[in-house]
Image (cartoon, rainbow, N blue to C red):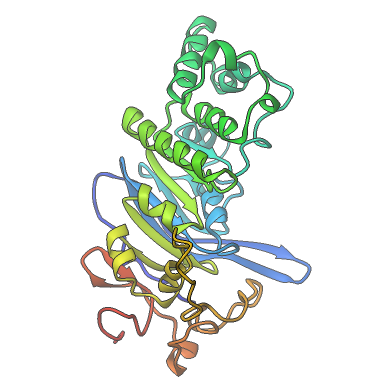
Length: 334
């Protein structure tokens, strides 16, 4: 089960969020779905952690488990030293105001019956923040910050906006309570390329303006590289590789990371895509994942050891960690 271990976790006072041995499982009639299987991550204040992997790897489930939506099966989610998995009720709801979520589909995440000004103001009203005049001032501030005219946009409803504009409204709603951590679940995957760039630039501006920490979930490594300070690669509920974008993109240590990088389209119509190095076979079932390393059934470098022994995350370079017995850089695991 590739990806067990905590060698990549950092001991520092500026770590805002620390996830330890997080496990999320769902019972079904066919068996137990192992969506997330014992992963560990951390993110420092003001940092952007990119969480990448193909569909079904568990990255969105990880983001929701951090918010306790639903609560994880086991493991710890430490936010400023508070284990979110061990609190509930009013205490959990109060702490959760400091963590906000941006959903993948911006249109369906907004109430179609309400005006934009009411959608953005709703968190303030629920938590009774300020007077009505102060709330309206805060709504005006965040709508203006995300590039929408408060007087024009505030009186409209979500169906009157494009997808990119709806995502801006979602970002405004997530910022209105002044959170410390923002979890972005593929916030640009449903948008046009030109609009994607606008939203990514907006997130960077909001991060600098409000001092927010980001967890950016995506399957597009090209997008993640431009916005992340650290990147974690997931496969079938496990962590494969963790490191800085420059290290991962210039010298990937895990075969899965290398395959993902080769799948990035080249913006040149004269370049013929190469079929070498592409992943073979289908993603294994999370109900019955392979023994040993979960990636071995699709790995071109798999050996007998990979089916018998689970690789542990270990350092192969400075701030570069991999869970692989035979990485492309560094030495073979002891």
